[in-house]
Amino acid sequence: MNAEERSLSAAQLLTDSWSRGEHIEGLPAQCRPSTRAEGYAVQASWPQALTSKTKPINIVPSVIKPHQSQSIGEKRGGRRMSAGDAVQPWS
Image (cartoon, rainbow, N blue to C red; front, side, top):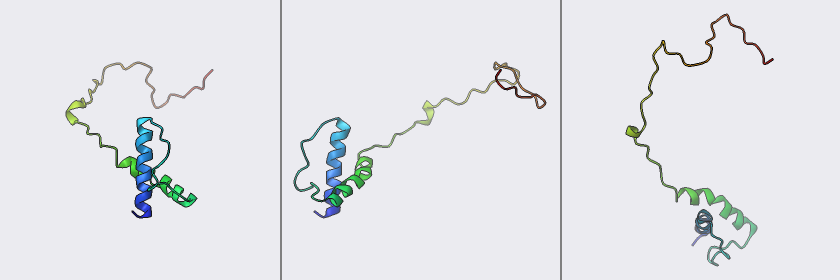
């Protein structure tokens, strides 16, 4: 197992336990970082470890209702402004 594989393996173990809300005592010896640089490599592997576990969400178009437009003459509440109206600050 090369250094990149060890980092990804450690990141996957950490993200799995994190997503389940579980605590682990430590990483297995085969993927435990032994230097600060290896620890940073594990941290850098988190995004890849997280995205390998997420599933895409499918949005079904039939579920989304088409926009119900209001008729032109229907009152929507509030005063309509015309081009010559001045905006008054809060008093």
